[in-house]
Length: 247
Image 1 (cartoon, one colour):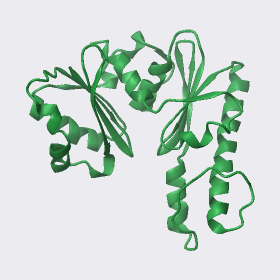
Image 2 (cartoon, one colour):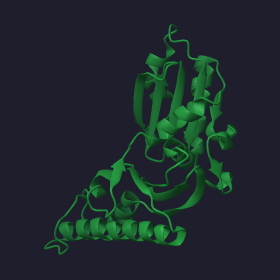
Image 3 (spheres, one colour):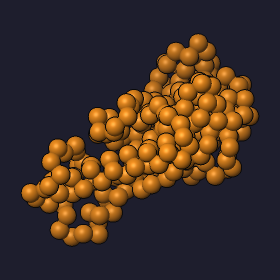
């Protein structure tokens, strides 16, 4: 068996898979809560001696949290973990950028969708809103824009008269009160941002793409983008599974 971990700015996903890729256990933890005491409580299942865990693979964009989890698991399981960028990823996809400057999660996402024949734009509505472009079997690069939650929290913290609120899909552009006006601005504003970037990518590369959405707010936009889109919130884990076959 092997452990696959996706360490993001908001959440940490830890999955235990059998050798035939059957999901045995999945944990979703809050990144901000990670410490040894918290891990000891949450990871008790993984320390059953009958599990025979022999590999640990991580994708991480939070080095400090990655270090805490890595050291904790290595100490408990007596196994050295491997980070995504330690693999020869060129066996799975051609990377046309400096891979040191691309988050491990974004490379995993590109590898997850890569089928050597179709073109993809992956849009991740996470702490940042990221766009990654895959043409045939090449990762061409991407775009990073501010994330919805980050932008909303900044606005709330800086504007005294804007209350805490949750983002929702709204049908009318004009808000009759502050909460609706903020929701409208974020919802329709981000649709504009996303659609404009998709159109610009399509125009500049002169190619058509399949659109894959992921991240916490992806469900808000599935019916608002002109192109047909698909949601896959486990895309990073799927990429890690492909990478695990390189062992």
